[in-house]
Length: 84
Image 1: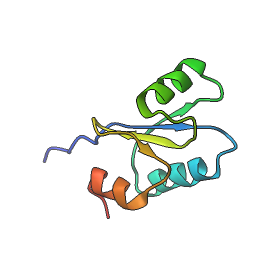
Image 2: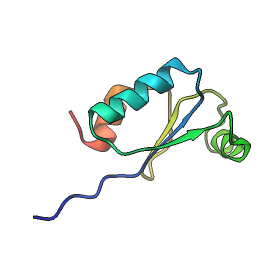
Image 3: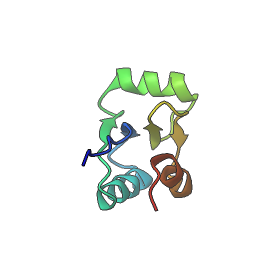
């Protein structure tokens, strides 16, 4: 049986962001692999996030080739990752 490849998930965060912590905890609970990019330490990533979204706030969650989500929107995340 072939294992289905998970959609790529990247979350742009800062250490002090409460919703970033909640989002990462949710992904771990659902066994969703993700890449955590700390924009407080990576200025290039912060500039890229702002260019792509027009936002400076976090979390910004990029799921596959979809438009990045601003904030922790569980229903949208579940729909994009096809999880319940």
